Image (cartoon, rainbow, N blue to C red):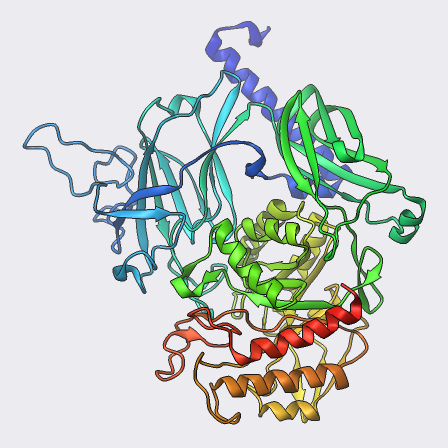
Length: 637
């Protein structure tokens, strides 16, 4: 019997199940043939900047809900979809006897993107639930297009509702997510969008309850509608083939490029084209299924580097429907004890950054914010940033691409994660995947980091090494690291953290002269590593309150911080091992932290910034700036 030719309802149902079975079979085949594609199976739409979008940024309404009244009833049961007390439902009284106990209207306004803590004094230390609401009109959509709702990030747990129906939920405060909006759910006018946002900290989450930064809550990054064809390119990766000898390729002026494309669903007969006009590349490929891998060679590529941040305009099309991007081509690798960019050794002149604009006491979220932070980085003569301790907004790696700044980006596996909990590992793996999926085409990103200062134990090493292996499977074109532990033993510092066996470089945080001894302890300190890998100082620093001056022995004075950096730099020059490959001091600017409560010098701020919370440079800024200038001149770039 031909079920496909039965009633429209049956036909539609059968087609759905047939397509689901075909997709499952194809995914199974890819699992066997190519694990890289399996790891890429994800519903996240990348590069929304290169697609048709409608911004939902701007003024939203809010309700503060510390008792979760809008989510649970008085018996602490999750409210039903038709429950009038549910805050995702729109209720308009029609007569005087009608009543409701919630609503969205002025003056309860809040700006998106942005954290709630900086927008009203009542939010300063608030952690809990806030409901966000706005209306929007459906954009022009043809019969062959779908609409997705995309969030750059929501901290931490988001439940999303449209016109009274739940689209889905997402956990993770620093990675993007999206939901397909069923066409039947969209109205031409006044679609009622509600997001329940909760930023409470829990032991079994990523990050956990204990951090050294403020837990800004809210819809902290861009929100947009993404309009795409019903069959579209969802994800892709294009880069130099990592197995080629890049020096030889430069000599021959012939480069191998490899990549893959993933569609949102399996197709039976379609065409994918790839165009790089400046390189005279125009390739067409037939695709069956939901994935395609490709390889071709080109001539005379201008390789992306710190002194030549060359980006090429690239267009990918599925059946003629385009998506555009700008991508730089480069090779990053470890060769023995050296980090090499395009076949040449490079020293990482780094600086750590938190995603904050300190003078406005808020989360950074815009292109303008990225320009401020990278302007300070460039003034420092740095060529690298460590984006701590979570993936930053997408404007950061994109601007790094355009400026030639190398990027270390990491997931917030931080301090006291519940390493023995399999569910916590799954959450970490999910955030790692979302980070890599979003940024795998950014040439500036050279290091995926899986965590920071995690205490050594067999359980922890198993947890962390699993993440390292996952990162390498997801993206073999970059280095993988983590901030490791180090032992201090009577002037001899030996790095033997067992996680170093799995990472590509040996990275560690050291505060000799701040948390241990005085800065002049650097004069006799000796450093050794167990691993014959590049050695990188992922943090070092000392606190100073901007504008406070005293003798150099006075803690929290700018003079003490300056002394600290002088001694550290002398140690780098005189007593560090030959595999010393870079440093990213902690940190570019002061940032909020509820752990820092000295009433004279901290007042809720971590003061290790080289720039204070008013935007003023401290004395230590100029010490590091001079060191980096010397290294830059010596290297010639």
